[in-house]
Image 1: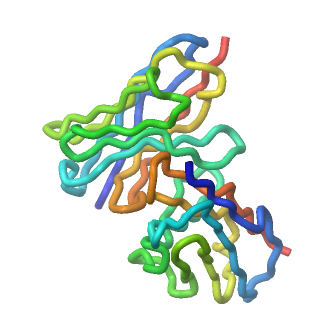
Image 2: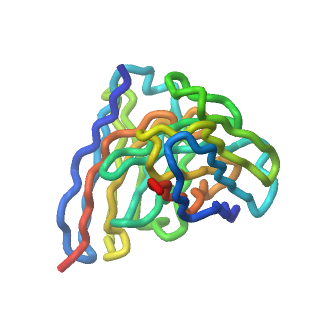
Length: 116
Length: 107
């Protein structure tokens, strides 16, 4: 059974940092592009970042470029999102997802709240 | 950026009704489109991939069609568990973009 389990969310002050993790199991993690997608409270879905299987290509939403870094460790079947310079508008549930064209499998999400 | 215009934004329907949701892309995206269902407090669930392919395990009352710029999701006979929010997603170009969502509720 495919499982994606996010962790690392929480309350952080504006300008602060958080590192999200996503532990994958039940599929060959190293064979898939991986992604982060977020959803602000009461709002729609917003793609954040993608990373290629070997980490050689990364793509970001413009509003997070230079602040967020996506990375992966295929030996640990894990995906990460380092978030620096957090802003109130980054408040959201962050989902990791595996990409086979579109996004096939999703985790349950981890909530990030940016507030003083 | 490719904009995805989804309509309607909300829809009231009854069990047994046939409903159609539309997504229009601001430029051609071939068939690089997925449809998702999301229930409150839950992660999205993929229903359709590559515009018209039914995800394994998804009931056959769900279907997708379209290519290029116009796409539709059809639910042939609504069931109680189908009342949820639906999103389209284009993955043809970066940034990947979702439609605004369609909230489907019980009439």
